[in-house]
Image (cartoon, rainbow, N blue to C red; front, side):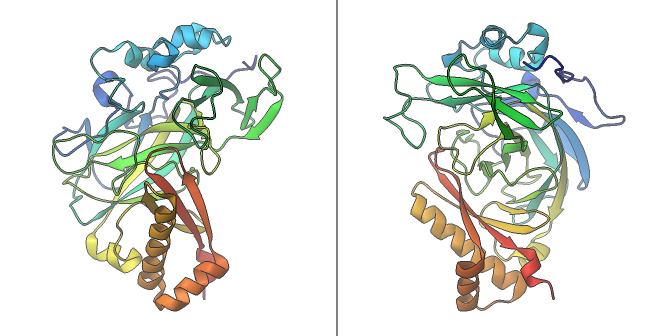
Length: 361
């Protein structure tokens, strides 16, 4: 670890004055499943509210890592004082996760937003994302990742410890086991999971994303970016989790650089009529950055995910800019990048980057 490690953002530590704060305590989180309509909100807010939310990385608390983050991170030189108390609490909690049937992710929420109704869009804007610790983990597990059956090469799952110089915004890895942390790459903190509850009383598995959002793993969703999600139930019942320090498009090994974040998220409601005028029919997650509109496509088949993304982009261009379908299709082919969000979450994801400046007149 860096000798000049930053302050560890333990629960309740270092909060901005007057913050509306939601800690990642056991009663405020789900582990391995996502909220559904029958779940009660842990917080209710008005549209326009900014909430300061603690999130916990699942890496370091999972069963294949010993379910003891103090012992797991001690093997990498991390003292007990630099391990998050809420991560320890979650790892020690009993009966909260079935390792055989539930996903790995811890999500904080759900948060009800007054006035959100089915047919509306919930806008979740990441106002800030602050690392809570100066380290993270990148894992590859058997049967998972782009090279399932090929890597990891040995009999055990592999969890790689990664250092971070948080102040400099740099992640660090060694070239070989036991080597110095001399490979440097930029940190771009974001939330892999942002979502709204599904209808009914069955909680979805935390791994595959869907129209409700969830584990979409789009690395463009950094500070200043908004994610629009079709509201499924009254109040939306939003949640966040799967915090990342950095991720490449594709997330090929299985995980990104997984590490806990404290985030500020603003919640807004876009009523159905306004949503239709601005975006057309939105069937799944849609993001907006300062520079790009980012429609998405999801499917277990990557080709279909890309096709669904193209369809979403065509619908968006027609609704927002009045483009004929054949002209919009030509524009997408000539001027828009289509990226693979991830190929490791059962349901694969693609996203497009439509430059808003191209339509400034």
